[in-house]
Image 1 (cartoon, one colour):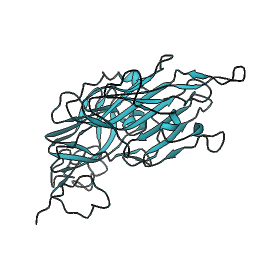
Image 2 (spheres, one colour):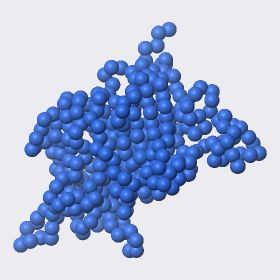
Image 3 (cartoon, helix red, strand yellow):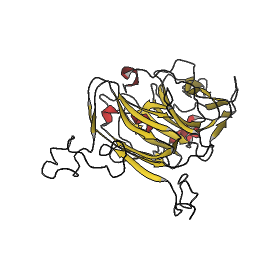
Image 4 (cartoon, rainbow, N blue to C red):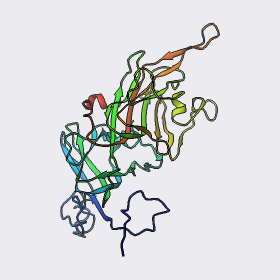
Length: 366
């Protein structure tokens, strides 16, 4: 019987189809994803609790990330596609750990973001997310369902930027070995921060992208530094040679993330929401002691409306609010907030090198 289905692009309609794709899974208990080699550890962080039970009884469910070191999480020979990633670790580590992904032996990463921001948790405070590609469940269970194809090789690393070790790093990477169509592009993600944003300037979400591809999502962590409403800024996408004016220009920050009218619901309160493609799942309020500012986490997935480009792409967002009325007339207020964004897109390789990621002090939530 011929089975042409490669096991990719899964949905309820094709889930019953047989496939020649081969399933594999990487974890601390099977770090190379080998067939029939899971749970064989005799030494690990849990060998104490397992001392009476022995091999096969959760001896190595997690690892410790050494200070100032890069740890390989996955080293996979292709062709194949990563279909699911699950990670959990203490929230204090979410901005000191950097997640990177490399496809087909490329010299620079296609994914480079702080761990928490990749999973829509940029503030080091646990927040549940109920979206299609990213799900975060109690308590701090990070899940990614972005399809990540590779043809020759995939490498995923995690770097601890600080000298202190990070214990209790749990992970699972589920992938399939299968044929990858020529038309499938490679997954990318890049993080940028403006803290604070310079006066009368736009925050750059993404720049320097070259090649053919499509933009699929934005996560933004914004900490506001002024009283009043903060979300009037327009999101703009400059596509294939756009210069001063973009092809895509939104009407305001809350509009881009799928909300309206300052996210107020009920009146005088922020309405937290998390849906398949859009959300503001996190609103952190001052506590009157050490937590001094309002902070928000928002996402917008362009899954049903990807922003396609042939040659290049640049994306920005304005930081704009309102001044107090002057002579009965409202006026915009250019703000200087703390804005960190993670951009997600697919493109044909090679990609342009990313800007250098700042050090741990700049990434830190302060």
